[in-house]
Image (cartoon, rainbow, N blue to C red):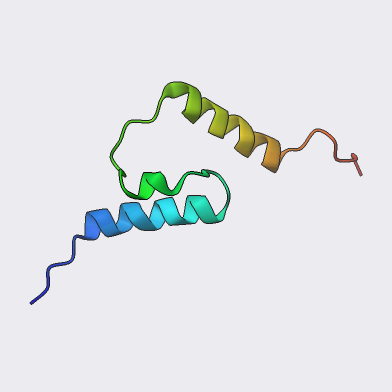
Length: 61
């Protein structure tokens, strides 16, 4: 019987989805799903998400 590590499978699925959505660009995160992320990288990601969700150059129709 093969053991499936659901926690790591979940982490990998989340990282793959973030790569697919172009939130993160480095597939190296797949190899290190528990590696700490520098605060600067985290905050830059938040800013990118905000700008994608609420771009400042859209007309106000």
